Image (cartoon, rainbow over all chains, first blue to last red; front, side, top):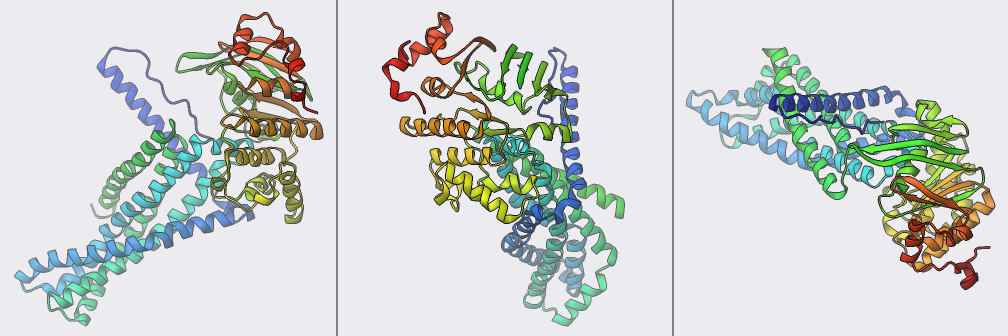
Length: 270
Length: 256
């Protein structure tokens, strides 16, 4: 399934040689993780099999519905915070009516997918890393292999489907809540009328912003699954290893989401 | 049926198997005993290629499992049932669902047929009443029995047991021994048992292999094993206070 024989650095004294070998080991890890997820993509047509439908449905529920409470609170407050900060500055120029446009553009383009990605990485991604890590150290993954059940089809593919389907939907949801949060501040604190706020939202919302935001969300879903499943399935060393896998899942996901978000922004807006 | 030919395995340059040669015949029960780190579990995992040998050949019915890939590897693996040390039941599934899993995934049996097979093996291991429970809600001994039910439900040709009695009290250990013995009598399978427990090894095995420093130090019948002059074997038996007259002193231990 995954080559457990990690790259071994040969004995060498040179600092540059050690850096080079570390780089090779890193490349091997990245390659393994990408390959793992691509193999899961290849298994996606199997999601409609009787044996897989239940697990896919549960993962959709777990990733989507279970994430709603925390996402709702964060999205609403982010919208309010952003509206306060931009509103204060816009008020100086008598432009507070444009706060709706500012909140909308920022949420659609960047903050919606980014914030949703971080929350899902910290909740769902960490959960996947911990669960698969525990399954690995307790030999449940080995048991699946001996039963000729492909862990990639059985475990990775349903999570990949759930994350890539739910991330865009959750991003749309968090965008809407943030815009609603912004509306509360605009109306109660900045004296903007509801209709003016909504008109401003519609005026500034572009199709391109929506599509690029949703594309980012889908890519972030792929990244979270890739990192979490790879970390989980390569866990070694009992409970300590599971803890490390969970931490690595969150940290690596955050970093990769950040860098990928920048690259996508540069491609579409740079 | 299972043949190890000069199998070597290293972990990060440290040898664990140093040219293992072992042959297991069809229908026999062999126990692998030895101290921790002797390579018992590693040997067992090589039989189903959960670990890759550094060199050598592992023949399963004449096919070298180290050369099998994809569907061919799956075909060879389907000959095996494996009881893991910690049972390795999927924690989010009930005992019943765990036992039904290999049938649901790998066969085209109807739900009724699966139900019949699952209930039959759960009855054999005296777990029929616990079918709806989650693994976390049952004792270690019950988990092992559930793991055993899952291992045999597909009617494999070869059963591998990784420390089936470890972590269990002596009474439950003997119950597991009797269960293994009964399953072998009923199913006529080839069995390989990794254990530290000499009482278990002596009572359920046709042959016992003593592993030492990654090689087979001695292979013999339980009676010959008890009278072995091999220093490694003698030390191992003495450490568990097993006398050469074990079967004469404890005739009630002989499983029937």
